[in-house]
Image (cartoon, rainbow, N blue to C red; front, side):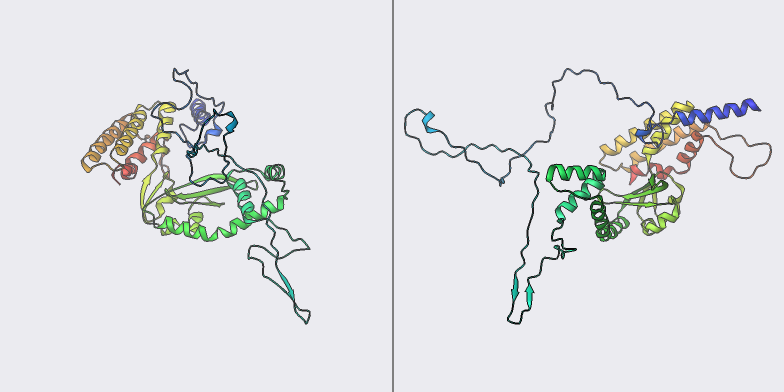
Amino acid sequence: MYFSYSIIGKLQLLNRVTLNSKNSSKPPASDPNRKKGSRKKSDKPSGGQKSHVGTTLQKIEDPDDIEVISIDRRTLPKGQYTEDGFETRQVFDIDISRVVIEYQAQRLINENGQCFIAPFPDNVTKAVQYSTVQYGNGIKAHIVYLSQYQLLPYNRIQEYLTDQLGMPISEGSIYNFNKQAYEKLAKFEAICKEKLVVSPCIHADETGININGKRHWLHGASNDKWTHFFPHAKRGTEAMNEINILPRYHGILCHDHWKPYYKYDCTHSLCNAHHLRELTRAWEQDKQSWALEMKRLLEKMNDAVNEAGGLLPHEEAEKWKIQYRKLLGKAEIECPPPDKPKEVKRGRIKRSKARNLLERLIDFEEDVLRFGCD
């Protein structure tokens, strides 16, 4: 008895320590001792190769500045010359500089001593505590971009603004700009949700994040044009209902088979990127040969779908389905269900990861293969 428990424990430990980003949903950053792939020296010259479509600067019609270069006629041979236009070349550069706009509101006083001042623009706020300067919307947007998209820490943003622009700023101001952007994006968030609700297909997922030292979940819903993120303390339907996209969605929902997704009234499509990683684990860790064959079959089918323009003809889709079912039959022999225990126990009999994956591929065939027919 001790020996059997010891073996099980070792297998469980092996599964934990050998999981990585290629055979599970773990992020690449968590891979232990990750090494860069070795590259063989190529005979090709450095830089872009022939037929390679690169990204190059293109001349523009309205340059910001024009500098005319005149010929020193003293260097030319003697003779009569006529103007023949110009040969042009353009240099693209940036000018990192501060722009200060001073608004001067006219003051008028009538014969009764009443003072009238021209109104400032809406974005120029009133003086506060005798301060008559403020940050403009351009620099606010730039700071929010650096903070929320480029993920620069507040102190790095402070250094950049001081060193490059001569514009000192406090951490409190950076925080306030982020808060202001958050509040102004409320309308955009509502629009984004509505766009996703009526989208023919969306993708949903959730990933663990840390907020003030506590575990939360970042819920994502997206299509090719719109993305909505929402952090929540819960991972399941409580959070999804609060976000209120999935409860109103009736298109095709692509996900990783997280059970709460199946509680929503829509057409489901399972993410085969997740399946490929699980199949890799089943082959590498459990030595399940069917898993390697299934991985290759799904990849070939994906190539066929792409070559067909995103949708397989019905007859061709049926041929792939026959291959899929035939391979699952082979897998049933190699990876059978667990034996029923002699003692009757309540609940489902525990299965291996490979068996759980196999049963999902069998029971949810339509959702697995939906990418080929829709």
